[in-house]
Image (cartoon, rainbow, N blue to C red; front, side, top):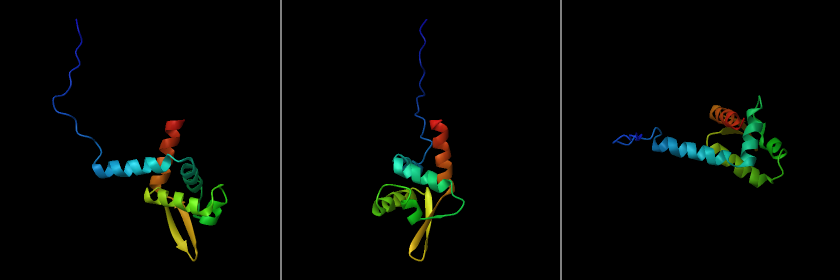
Length: 108
């Protein structure tokens, strides 16, 4: 007696739309870098937004590199920022906090 696998004759459509796929891929790419992942973790732990100078002090990279990482996290909608005078202040968005929590659960 042989067991045959019955495949549907019509392919199942992807659950994600093209836009959702692009946004998710951008988030995953942003989170795949150890520095950006640590930055998101740092910002997610804060009760108040952090000045870019305080973020820079936590990492060994120079300020332009830190700014680049922050830009990629912003573009992925994982963090947000606000200019106050000459300084930018950053915080984790709800999407950023949820993404970080999901990754921690997966890794745990």
